[in-house]
Image (cartoon, rainbow, N blue to C red; front, top):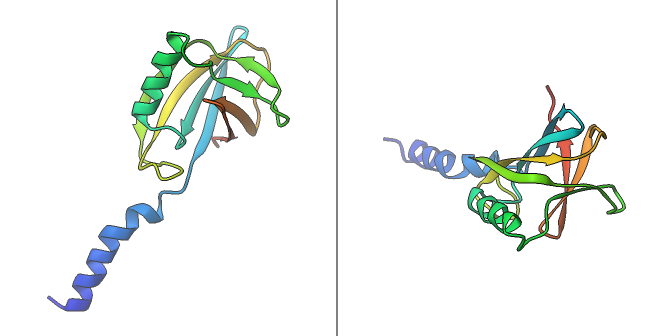
Amino acid sequence: MNKRLLALSLAVCVFTPSAFAACMNKFVSRTERPNQVVTLLTGKLTFQEAQELAKAISAKQSAPVEWVDDAGKTMAKQFGELKVVRPMPVGCDGRSSGVVVVVTFPTGLVPSKKMNVKIKDQVVAFEQQAD
């Protein structure tokens, strides 16, 4: 086999996954009675970190997830459990993967285009997922 072809093949195998792994923070929401049920796709937490956070929130050892405005003022706090759905292949801040979680906010407000969510003392900006 040609050495250049072999080197190119190895480079594609090694560098391709990281080339497509841009940080992703997206959301979709739906209204259920007076609540907003929001699905967050984030690379700011791994699947394991999200599971640990959900347990800590349930045990009241960690603050609930909050929907905040641009100034950091709380618009709504998490209601019920933080549902950890599945891992996703895109991570942020050096993480190799992210997670999909579902959180319910007891509010009639409907997020649109952009949403700031406070997770573990960190505010993460989410963009609405296109349909």
